[in-house]
Amino acid sequence: MGRKADVVIPIGAITSVEVERTENWDSGGNLSHRFAPVLVVADEAGSTRREKIIEWRGEWWGQTHAEELAAWLRERLRIEPPRGDCG
Image (cartoon, rainbow, N blue to C red; front, side):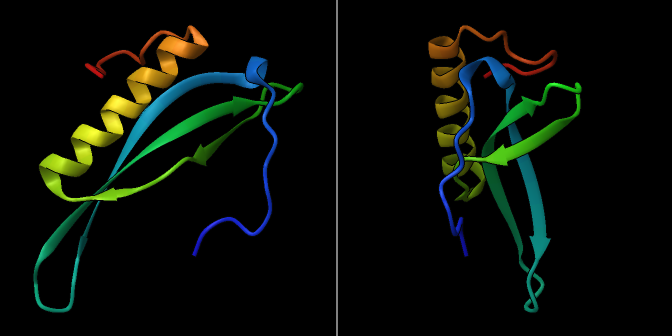
């Protein structure tokens, strides 16, 4: 799993940094949580795509790390947090 080739993203194309949360049930009936900071990138035509940076598992630990990295990236890139996001 993971990227096969490097992806170059111009800084000016990054419109947002968000945290995606996913939940999955395993075959044993256990719920797992995953958190991933993602870059929202716009092309010249205005279409957007989402580029996952990294993904962490775990309710508290994963969410904390994902939100801290997203906040750090927003600060460095001078991007406002999405509405409703406290990270």
